[in-house]
Length: 137
Image (cartoon, rainbow, N blue to C red; front, side, top):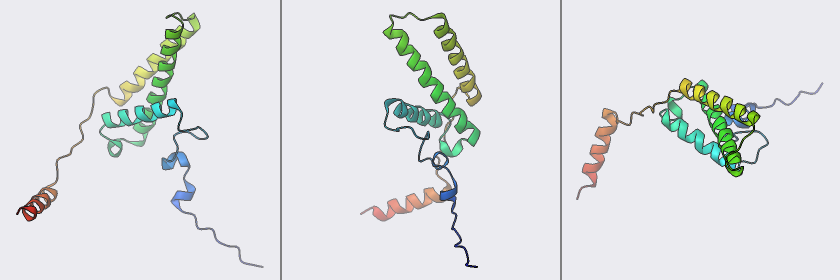
């Protein structure tokens, strides 16, 4: 019997492209206008919550859902505008459900911004101060 070659599995190989952050959605062209808008919304919501390092995995999922719901409501806004503001009863009911779901999702995340602590540690402050002293003529 010949020995089978052992494959070297790495975290990079076992995680999906979505988990790795390489793709937002599988098999979707990331260059489309709505995908760019999705990335912008995710970035804005994440910044409101203090940055990616302060967001839990659950908050990141809610941020993605809130961004997608926002895009869907914006698409319906555009549809209504192109139709001189007219909408069918079904469209209005769908719009109402979207907006209510978006509101609840945003409330779950918190509607106020979180400030990110950018105060340097004592060690960082002293290092910066020493660097300034060295650079003085």
